[in-house]
Length: 347
Length: 166
Image (cartoon, rainbow over all chains, first blue to last red; front, side, top):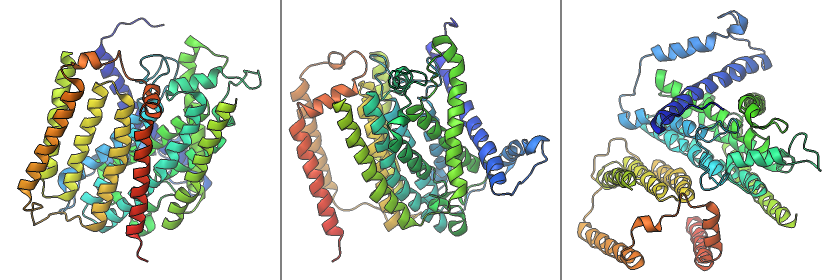
């Protein structure tokens, strides 16, 4: 399409710059649309409506600049290096997930598809690197030298470990049905599939993997430590858990990590279950341009579901949290895998 | 192969420094964090060998779960911010003997398995497919795989029995 020869190093630099630019942007979009606007209207507490004119759109940018101006405060007893490194690890895990999400037939940072087409480890890689944030959370909680922070970090670790299993297991059904772990391959499977011979909408995997989709949504909500799974950051009892000692720039890192990861999980859900960038009757060159817009629309829809639950339900107790993961989600996920495997062999 | 060799050297040096950090630091939490460097280096070496799936298993299982459990356990029991006492004990000589023994076994096994084969000959064209790994596990290595499964089950049940008070 566009024939520009660029070297390996230049490509790498451009890709890195794109990811570095996109992640804070997605965090900003989700934070603005859902946290500031949707929640405030749902809960009838409008907040700042004046800055910038239309619905106070400038407020979040102002908040961002405010964070950058704040003094970088570190507790006297803190473990300085670990304290400084922790937010970077949380954000790193967010950045790494974005690397494999395809936004069009040829638009992706790295597909990890190599030998043959659609023969990569894309979705497995995404789940593996998203688990790195737990280390950052534990480091932050411990290095703050603060009882609330340590309690929050311990709760976060217990919760993230418990919900990582259903998250991974929910995806296995999709992988079995599509026959590939490559995200691009999963999108192609959904695009080229047909529904009883009618190929109007392709074959979005949510039609057969609706159990997996539900499990993925619940587990990703818990991985994000969003309400109703926000025991680790419970502001009324733990102040803000592992983030309590962080201010200014480093706090902004946690914010970007939280909302960037929300966007990444929504994009994964859209790619795995809703067909990703694909529009079945649009092919090749046109899909390169339409793809990102289609993916963005789907991501916003999935994110809307996530934040709708976030702003609606009250917090679970710690024992309820663990019981949901171990007694309900994991057995259901295993049954789903078994059923998918049997049906895959049968048909 | 030069690029691979340079990358191997850099990663290996980082792993060695991390490993020294694990045993040198006085802080248990720092030791666990140094271990992350070592394990991440292991994952990077797997990628150099074209074993993408194994590399990400290493990240998901060891860094994402095992280290987290280490940190969780340390922080639940004792994790002093500024430890006074050294973590050393008097078992340096037995430890040295064990380490030498282990190095001997590993070197012996490597030499016995690969003889004079160079890594170029072993490497396939590009990364190894996930399907190849699963096929190997569920055909050639099915019995060791099942034995490991039973061993893990035994360990799990043993842990439950030990942890129960009644």
